[in-house]
Length: 296
Image (cartoon, rainbow, N blue to C red; front, side, top):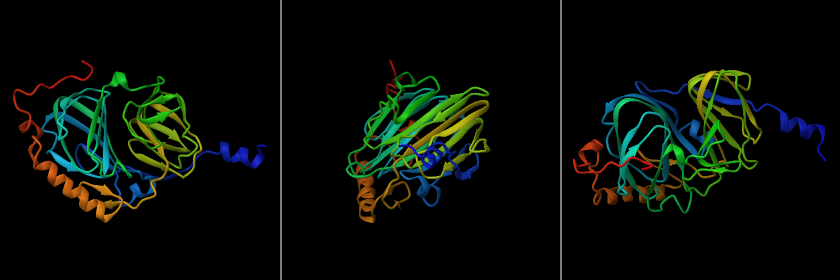
């Protein structure tokens, strides 16, 4: 039987525990890293918001291990390539899922025009932490949506992302028009949740949230938001990662031993891949490379 106290607990507004505008200059804002904010919401450990005006070489081909990177293009397109042998063109609304596992290298090149979105790092557990790398590139038409929320990773209600990931997680891109009200209902087992706004302003938990990240108090209560103007944001929840975050320059592992194995795997991959380490991706993709458009 539901008591009055239980009813209050299930309907009370979920409070904000922490908020940040991040740091960094230029087109990339780091909103979360493992040393502080990532500890609050792990398995989510890094979050960057990017807003570029291309063309650009997109940075150098670089490695990862122990984590998966999830890149969401809210606007624009990019040319990608990775050490699993895949390359192509990811368009507006698409997703790159790079499960680094025991070691991977990847990079991107930005065509002319604006490119905007988020890159999220997810800490992996056994058996994926040191598993062979896998990459998945998903076009916008393959991302399930209820009309407001697109499922970027994991599941939400009856909707499930095509990205293969066995852990219980929800990661959504939500677009609301001015004045729209929307409620996020995390899975009952999820105890960490956060959101980050790319465009516009939200009212949530009694606060106005602009281009920033907010972390909610632990629990599984719903989170209600109201849009002030048109708003584009991401929101996520998960079961809290119970392992320590053991970090290298481009890696996050659960133990120092696994970090050593992962960084050794990075060196092994570099010795045999066709990509050129620490150089722009364009130098690795020859003129004869066929850059395919997703969905064709």
